[in-house]
Amino acid sequence: MPVCGLPDNLYVGREYDSASGDIRGLLQGASEAKFDFVVIPLFDSIAKPGQEYELRPSTVSDLALDSKTWNSAVVGTLSTWIAHGGDATSEERELCRVALEKELHWAQHLGVYGIVLPRPPGPRCELYAGALGRLLLSGIYTTQLMLRIPLSWEENGQQVDGWEVWNKFRLLCDQNSRLQVALELTADLPSTDRELDRWFAEPVRAIIVPADIFLTNKQSFPVLSKRHKAFLLRFFRYKVQVILQGLGDGGQDGDGDTSKYLHYIARLFQSREASTAQEQFELPYHDYLQAPLQPLQDDLESQTYETFEKDPVKYVRYEDAIFQCFRDKVEAGKTDLVAVVVGAGRGPLVVAVRSAAARAKAEVKVWAVEKNPNAVVTLRHRSKLEGWTNVEVVGEDMRFWDAPRKADLVVSELLGSFGDNELSPECLDGAQRFLAPDGVCIPTRYTSYLTPVTTPKLWNDVKNYSDLAHFETAYVVKFHQAFYPTTDIKPCFEFSHPNWELTSNDRYAEIDFTAEVEALVHGFAGYFHCDLYKDLSVSINPDTYSEGMFSWFPIYFPLRTPVLIRQGQQLKSHWWRCHNEKKVWYEWAVSEPSPQPVHNPGGRSYYIGK
Image (cartoon, rainbow, N blue to C red; front, side, top):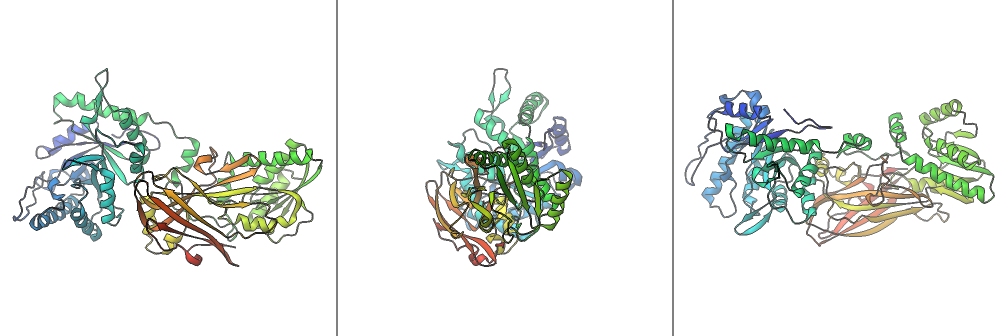
């Protein structure tokens, strides 16, 4: 029975060294001890080079259990000797290849819940990875395949980093998304938390927790060290399963000790902090590729407006900024103020302007300009229903509407996840013609930011489209299963308003990053920081994040070919913002440590329509 939790339950299994006895009794004992599944060796095969491989299932045949039990309660392991190293002879290599193929076929025949593949022998894993990669490409394996990877181990007197071996192995398998990780905790953890953090981006399906890494507390109960505990607790956010290893033979004398380990894992899982309202809202969007909105080209739907209007932070910040602006105008002697809300949507900024005017005790005439005819219907309805006597609704495109008089304030919320990617610069440049010489734009300035990101899940999602265009497209994403090789988040493009000189909105930036740990970069995560008025801002840049705001998720710029960067190595990136009479687009490229083609030249794959 799984350990209950929100939003997910935890499934805990127990690994056995042998399954050659009474398999039904073993399963019954595990079930009575409250384990959800068992991990057992599926084979007793032993072979020598020069001999033909003979398949010897540990349970003799598939009749040992019914198919439902195989499917739901058994994870199988393969023979450990088939994971040969680079020094194997040709006879050994062929023997291991045949054994791997036959054992995987048998496991697939059983329909087991999952398969744990043997640990690679070390960095020289090319032959093992090549053999497995060919079998993965055959497409016959539907069961989840988990490669056993300890955090670290010793090989020929040398310490081996588990992540480096896994990274090499998955690259040799062409980053096949069906290959996952069974990550085994070790007594000695990597020296830095940054090395541990890399694993949160990887497709870790199960965490193997050996009994011998537990400590004993004053009450003689098994507990994990602080670092082990924190690492495992954080992994619970990623829907992993836990496999307890090395608990003994499961006899009657060991049942009490066994329950102590299971109860500790269950208590740890249930000690997680409850999800906030924002986290619950974001949950369905984790690592889900979304096309950025194009509000100039497309009319937004009612549901989209409704989602944005629920943001508990954005409109409060906007109202405070508008209030400060009105107060400054009133103190400067202005009494008859004019405000224009451009891209008014269904009216949240109109409400903010009216509330700010009341707070500032200012008389304000408001024009609400909106090109979406469906949203205009709602604006006019609200105007009558809520008594917006000082508001005139204008159903036109802000770039072409002629205002009856100059405005003291132009307010907009045209920002995208990368700041300017919904054409806020072009829109506000067009709208500033009806701004008074001493008029104010809210927002006054916004800057986009970038940082490299490791995200195998998202990269594989893009790869699955099987075309170039999707690798040259930017996506709105709530990053979850991701790692950032550097803590630096650097500025890219900046825009200020009003832009009286109408300087070009095309941009170029060259941005260098230095890796703080070895990592595989799958692209870049983009953010923005926006100054609304004076010291009031809204931001999705993690360094200045507006806590509780969920109107914008980050943006993801993928790389066609992931880049491996070593610790201390420089990653040099190049960014362009370009336009013609019909569209605006981004281009991006990496030139160091190895050059790649420019992505999206001429906006051939992805652009924002004007």
